[in-house]
Length: 376
Ligand code: CMC
Image 1: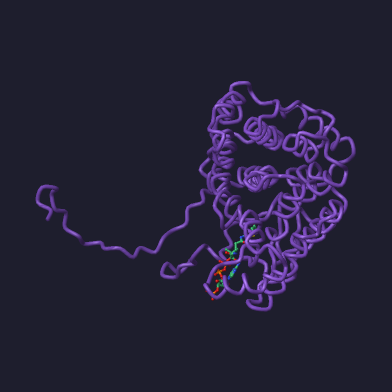
Image 2: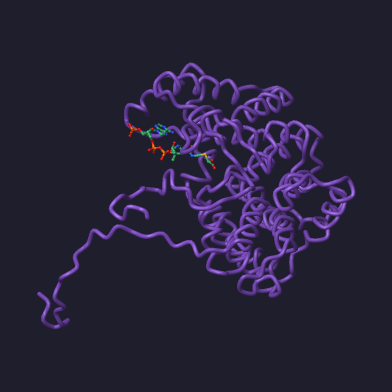
C-alpha cells in the first residue's frame, strides 16, 4: 500500500506501468527503442522503419517496410473539408493549436477509428502519415505557396521537407531530418505520452488520445525549448558574448533552455547525435556560427551549473539550417512523436487499467454552508 501522506511531486520516480516500447538509462545516457540503441537506429535506420519497430516490436523485412511506405503515401491525403478548415484558420494561429484542432477535426471524418476504445494500427498509420500534410497545408497557405502535391515518391522525412520548403531537399538534408524524426519518435513516459495513455485508459479513442498529447506537448517545458535556444543565440550574437550573457541569466536564476533533464543525469544521447548533425549541416552550408555558439554555451553552462545538454540544445540549429521556421519546431516534434504516442496507446489498450492517481488533501473539511444572501 502506498503511503497516502507522501506526495511525489510531478510523479517523479513513480513507476506507473510496464512497457516494452522504450527504455531510458538516465545514468548511462542510453535510449533504447524496443531493444535497439538509438545510436544504431540514428546511424542506419529511417523514421519509417522506426515507426514500424515501435508499433510491431520488431524491425520490418524489406517487404514489410515497402508495404508500410506504400500505406503512408496512400494515407497522406486530407479530407477536403479539413484542408478547407485549415485554410480558414487565422494565418498567425499557433501551429500547435492548429495541429491539435486539425487532429480533432479529422476524427469527425474517420468515425471507425473513434469508437470508444477503438484501437487499430490503421489509425496509428493514418495519423503518422497525415500530420506532415496538415503542417504543410497550414504553412504553405500562410507562406502563399500552392497546395501540397501528394509526392508518392518521397519518404516521410523528404515529404515533410518538400512540404515546408517547396523544393526538393538534398540527400543530406533529408538524412538530417530523418535522424531528427528517429530521435524524437519516443521517450518512455514523458508528459505528452502519459497524457495520451491517461486518455486511452478511460477507454477513449486513439484520436482523442493524440489530441490530448498534442495539447500537452505544446507547453514550453516539454516541446518548444529548442525555439527558446535559438532566441538565446540571437540575443548572444557572437561567441565572445556567450560568457557574459549566459552568466547574467544564471545569476538572475533564469533557466537556460536545452539543458537539464528529469531522467538523464549525464548527456542526453540525442544531444550527442544532434551536435554532430548541427556541425554537418552547418559545414554543408558553409556556416558554423550556430555550432560554434552552442559549443561555447555548453561549456559555460556545464562549468557554472554542471548541467548537460538535452535533445533541444542542437535540434533548433539543425532545423534552422534546414530552413524550417521556429514556430514549426514543436509541430515537427509532434510529427515524429505521434509514432510513439500511438504505440503507447495501442499498448495501453492491450493491458488496460484506468490511470487514476490520488491527491493528498490539504484543504478544509468542516466548513458550514452559508446561503448566498447571508454571505458577507
Ligand atoms: N538552466 C538552469 N538551471 C537549471 C536548468 C536549466 N536548464 N535545469 C535545471 N536547473 C536547475 C534548477 O534551477 C534547479 O536548481 P535549484 O535546485 O538550485 O533550484 C535544479 O537544476 C533542478 O531543477 P528541476 O526543475 O527540479 O529539475 P527537473 O528534473 O524537474 O527539470 C527540466 C527538468 C527539463 C524541466 C529542466 O531541466 C528545465 O527546465 N530545462 C530547461 C527546459 C528544457 O530544456 N526542456 C526540454 C527538456 S528535454 C525534452 C524531452 O526529453 O522531451
